[in-house]
Length: 362
Ligand SMILES: *Cc1c(COP(=O)(O)O)cnc(C)c1O
Image (cartoon, rainbow, N blue to C red; front, side, top):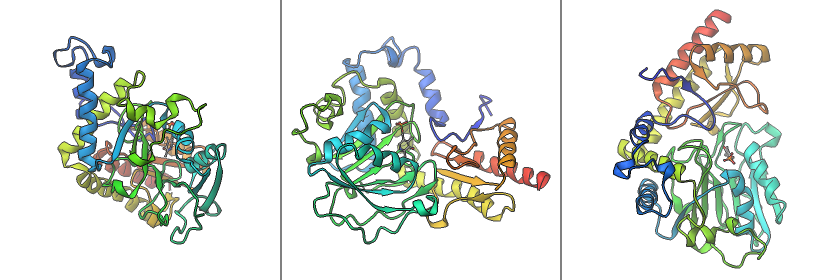
């Protein structure tokens, strides 16, 4: 390995594509003749405006975002969206949420501060190891939206078929699967993603919102930053944006286009995840914790069934150059996050390591 980097299986902030990091390095001291680093630039300068415009254009191309959707770059992470969504989208004060794990739970708790929240389906009784049946949800007529977390980063479950919202607006937290596969944007009213999982550095969210959902008649006490209209009317630059994250994400959008777009990314992600799941299905020592049909391509939790042994694997893996495999404290065991930027070789090397560990400790 050229830079002596570890294979980083962190759930986020997470590994980024090496060609992108190299480009950033090359432009660090003097961005394309501007005489300065992007970190040092005025966000009102033409050179930075071009960076934002290109980032948005490349994302639109990549996802085929229709013209009636706005692309917003917002700070505060995915966590701020847990509040911004009810504040902006609750007209009737009613929303439906599907509870599938840790992140949807947090979104539900936040939304409850603002209105009447119906948890219309939950996999809580199965420890969030699957996506509940959503073919016949009991959605009140006046519900403002239906909310899902499309990939639960901690529990490792993912949606392979969207719920039937009966014509209501669908809102999706795509933080840990954003750009991992093609996405039909017009199925949604609002898609958002914290970029530090599958795209770039921490501190920013991309929100893709259908224009008619951007409202002006919010409670006048709403912080100006929390109104989607503020961001939409000001090209995501009402105040100083996270310039650095916009720049880095733009590079990743461009890189994804260069490798063949989201179809190619999905093909690679399926292959890569299969290496890991095939191993888990054949291992005597390690077991995946998620039902087969809901398994995430991005976050793969697994256990030995013995806490001490789990800890021993994590430590041995770390020493062997595989970092951040410890499972989240709420699930335990191990978790391999294999986002877009994790090369297939990294997963293959991890599986070789785990096989050897099993042979020596089984
Ligand atoms: C990490 C994560 C969040 C929270 O993101 P922050 O940017 O830390 O606020 C929300 N939802 C999902 C699915 C996540 O993976």
